[in-house]
Amino acid sequence: MSGLKKFLIGAGLFILLLTLAGWLLLGVYVFPGQESHSGQTALVNGNFLTMAADTPHVVTDRALLIENGTIHGFVPSGELPEQAERVDLQGGWATPGLFDLHVHLGGVPMAEGYGVPAMILEYARQFRNTRKKFLRYGVTSITSLGDMHPMTMNMRDRLRSGELAGPRLRVAGPTLTAPGGHPVSTIYRGRQRLIESAARQLAHPDSARQVVDNLVEDGVDLIKIIYTAGRNDTLPRMKYPVMEAIVDRAHRHGRKAVVHVDTRKDLADAIRAGADGVEHLAIGPGREADSLLTAMAEREVVQVPTLAVMDSFMDEQRMDSVMSHFTRWLDHDIPIALGTDAGNIPAGESVYRELALYEEAGMSTYDALQSATINAARHAGVADQLGSLEAGKKADIAVFRRHPLEQLGELSAPAMVFKGGIRPLAE
Picture 1: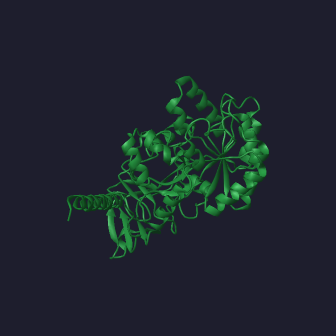
Picture 2: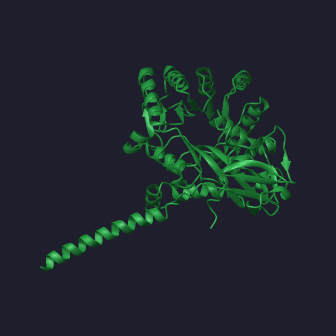
């Protein structure tokens, strides 16, 4: 055999082994899922903040029994089945797993300060570290509101099947915006591949309806609309009939439509179009705000404020104005659900900054925690499965060392996290 032939064979084997090693590394370090919970697990020696009532209700004298990933109910410790595996909460405080209803997965590696090689690896492993981090902070349910499509759908399906570990994921797919509107001409500017996968630029109601039809056929969980010309009114704004057509079409398919707003006009149009929720807080609502906020409350349009992201880039004076506006929202009893805009800020930990800001604006600690649990579950359409510690619901649970309602502004990562009865981060 000639030397050249030996070299080529050796080089081919080396490349093959390198490829196999790469796939093995991706498989081993991708944070794979575990087998579904089976049998019975009893959480003992804990305090359980159920979030199942309009006022705080804590169960202290019973164990929480989990059966096949679902909450069976509260049982006196002396009456637990002998075969149940017991997990000692050591006096910790258990709440339902938390929600973050406004996430951009594709932006998280940049917000976390990843270098280019680490960023590429994070994308290749379908956001392994991001998924871990959400769980580490007790966030067991998230909503992607504008990411690469259909890549995020694939990740959602792998999470649902148990192939991957991570939070429960709802996906809006690409954002729907005006031609040249946000984020096409702002954060996506010059990145054509990202624009094509993570945005749809719509100028006519008919094409908008077709896009919604296509996305629903793809399996998206909800629809996200960008309806803003920016705070300085310099960007192309989607035409109102286009937004109205999108909302109507989404509702015909049984999907909710949420709208990114920045100003009072944005907010007024979104409410008029029948939006189910608005993302971000409309600043400068003007003297006419009270009637607008009253209409919002009457129609139960859910506000996802994303105060944490505003707090990350605004100076103190501007943030004080934001907080003042948010207090007006609270005065009108508008339903609030928690979202952070993670991806523009770090994942997981930002939930606690969001909660602290709600409390600073005048929201009670219990109402704030409701926004991250049962109220978020209602807005997501999954309150029959998640959001409170009740029999028949999935066993998604965060266990904190301290009483959450006494330490809300100082909360951080919980001591234990369960998703579907399993501790996905346990060694």
